[in-house]
Amino acid sequence: MQKLDPNKWIDKYSDYLFKYTLARVSNYELSKDIVQDTFFSALKSAKNFEGKASERTWLVSILKRKIIDHYRKINSKKGKAEVRMNFYNEGDNDGDWLEERVPQTWDNMAEKQLENKELQNQINSCIDKLPEKYAMVFKMRTIQEIDTEVICNELEITSSNLWVIIHRARTQLRRCLEDNWFNK
Amino acid sequence: MFKKLNITCKQAVAICDKSQYKEATFFEKIQLNIHFLCCKICTKYSKQNVFLTKLCRNKSNDDKKKQISLCMTPSEKEFLKKEIEKRYVKE
Image (cartoon, rainbow over all chains, first blue to last red; front, side, top):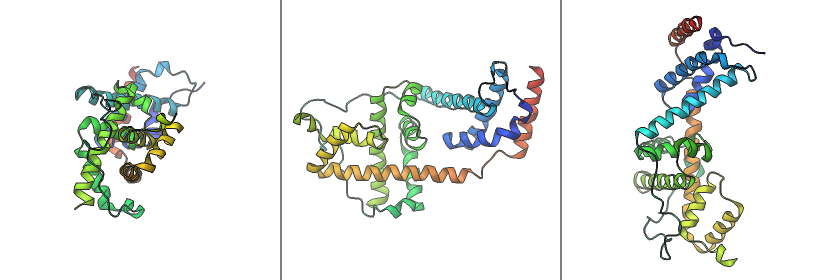
């Protein structure tokens, strides 16, 4: 049976946990808070540690909980990420490109453009311009690659809701890129 | 059967978004590709969508690389260490 050794936690795990968090919340100060919070919660529930998993695995599982809690908190603060469904099957006339902006031609949509630093900055500022709920869901799914099911459970939305949000986020990003990059 | 293969642009776009996350079913992909044969606009949308996804993934890889050098400062670690020791003794 393994035993916990909290006095060595910082030396052994703090860097790993910190990077893990930063990659997911992309905010330096916030990551520090979450890591600290994780250690304190771990201390509190140290009695429940059964030694089935390694110390690190155990800490990471607590950390994951904390990160999800963080997302949940923003979600409830901003009102639930719920949107009205109007995607599929709304009648016979529905379903062409008339009411949505038709994709314009993007010049220069070459692979090497992907490495372009200015374009990277542009996409960053476009993501920042999204409404907060959309940005949150879009980032969780696309950048952090969290599974659809997990996001739906944690934010208490349905999967069709999630896809509508993703589609709207993508539509706005496309528009933003078209206005600021491709058709400049 | 043939009716099922015929989808609207809206449905096509929805499938296209899903397939960016590898969540479109095999049948949906068939529907999508048949739709591409007769709809140039959706084909264009799809190509741009792929580009957008790659751009975002690139960005996240880039962020991760940058963050490798970032850590908590030694003084912050020291502080946290003492705090943990204090609380651990209490427990």
